[in-house]
Image 1 (cartoon, rainbow, N blue to C red):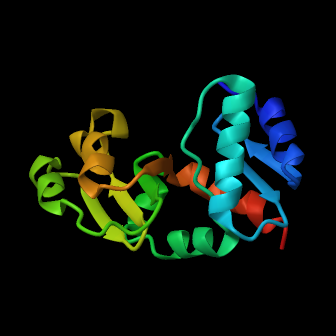
Image 2 (cartoon, rainbow, N blue to C red; image 1 turned 135 degrees about the horizontal axis):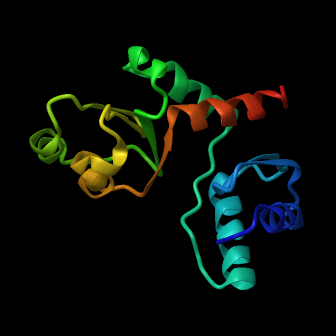
Image 3 (tube, one colour; image 1 turned 90 degrees about the vertical axis):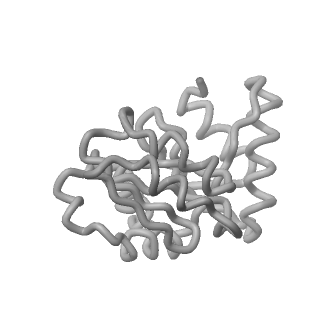
Length: 163
């Protein structure tokens, strides 16, 4: 576990400023002069490994990417129950996702849709009970990080404070 105060200091050591974190989730909103997200993500991973002994997957999204993901939600009616709607942010758009496997294991009340580099999952019974959620990353063939709708909206609200 990486304490958020240490995460903030780490990001600041890499030239980030105005850093704000969202709960103990590994989510942060910040400004950085580095324009290449891959370079910055590599730097963050390396600093975490150096200081804390583990190397997590780091995915960076800009404000435009977050706005697009929110606006593209194919299940707007699920927003009323924000813990049932999950967005899997992918490193890139999958080249050959195995959507058939996901269709075969989804529950009757689950729905999913892949749009560019975001996999949307509406799981009314919860993500913990969803075989589809458990297999999504493997079936898509791309590294992913998932957040529920409430978290996505909270992080977006934090990001919008920067204008």
